[in-house]
Image (cartoon, rainbow, N blue to C red; front, side, top):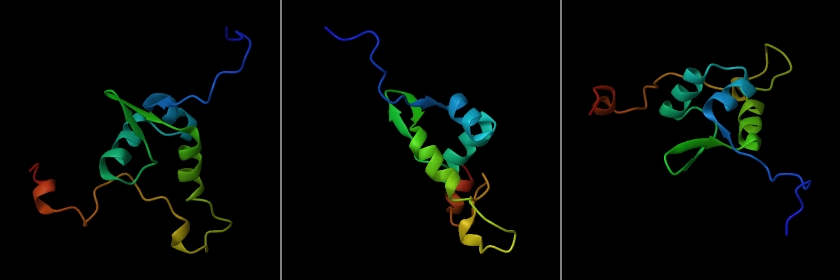
Length: 92
């Protein structure tokens, strides 16, 4: 018999919860997922879920100590990038 007072295991977050944690709109997080610029996610059944540790690691990529820090410490914007094929941009 399990202890009802035992702490729950780490919980995955759905997109709206993950977006709130990152102070983003859920649409921005969805765009990051679509363009491949966002945090790692998992598909469980038909649901997209995020591990809070993955969200934290992604946010840490943007960590900087001054405006003159090199660009390698930058999280890319949620938009299509030139590396995507023209067929993809046309909607296949």
